Amino acid sequence: MKIVPAREAAAAAELQLAAERQELFLLYQPKIDLVTGGLAGVEALLRWESPAFGLMKPSEFIPIAERSGAIDSLTDWGVRQVIRQWLDWREQGFKINIAYNISALTLRDVHFPDYLQRLCQIEGMPCEELTLEVTEGATQHAIRLLDTLTRFRIKGMSLALDDFGTGYSSLLQLRQLPYTELKIDRCFIRDVADDPEARLIVRSIIDLAHGLGLVATAEGVETEEMFEFLVDLGCDQAQGFLMARPMRAQDLAPWILNSQTHWREQCKRPALHACQLAVA
Ligand code: G
Ligand code: MN
Image 1 (tube, rainbow, N blue to C red):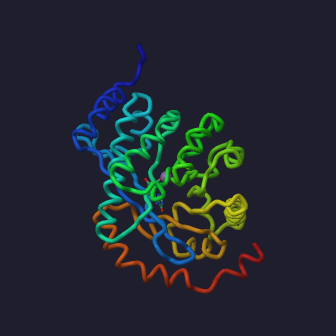
Image 2 (image 1 turned 45 degrees about the horizontal axis):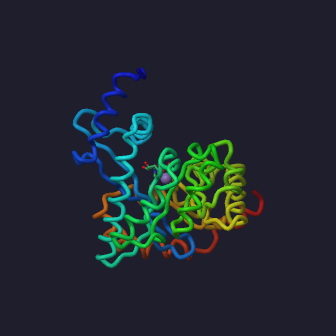
Image 3 (image 1 turned 135 degrees about the vertical axis):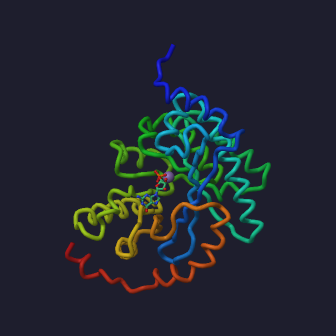
């Protein structure tokens, strides 16, 4: 028998039932298009609040769900919820691309893309409106994932490589796997305004993304300064607390209506840091 710490075993048992007990919910965080200032899409972020464990962080409960097998029911709940949410926004007059974080374990199943496509077709959501986010750690065995990832692309879904720059086999994966978007990890973005070396790295990642025909998205954009540097560096999209914290679905439409003019203005601004960039 596998020995697991008591907390993990208890959490795993609870997780298996979390979906049917309605303890799961999704928060949505906007991604801004840095050329137009418009909404590029949202990332759906899974949250679990249980009576026994309170609000447990995804960084804790996702690995437990992966080890216990509960991840399948979480993923199934998550993608169904995303599809329902897309349709709901569509009814309200918004067409919003939704990105969902997919576990490495789910990606081992080459039939998952077909399943997801069928769900989309039954409900009436175009596959093009869906982005799957994959983390680098998850993609260590690039070749094994090629089949599944290619199937998503054939169906028209987009594929984002999440937290780029923190893994070790990222460059090989970029060459071998059919990603459409590269999300620059927030640890590089954090220092982009203060540290010329961080800026150089971010600029190189953006160039790399563009060279490979990928959209470059900055994660963890928390200050105006970071935002301005990213605009100047030619980054395509930005996501972070500066624009919005992850929010409940019902808060997104008001957020769009309140802030779209502001972000359009921000992106129109002249490049304030052009001189600094030249000497960096
Ligand atoms: O690995 P991934 O990019 O999917 O992680 C998303 C997580 O990052 C979410 O849980 C979200 O709350 C958090 N997050 C989003 N924007 C910011 C930000 O600007 N700063 C920090 N520190 N965390 C953020
Ligand atoms: Mn993500």
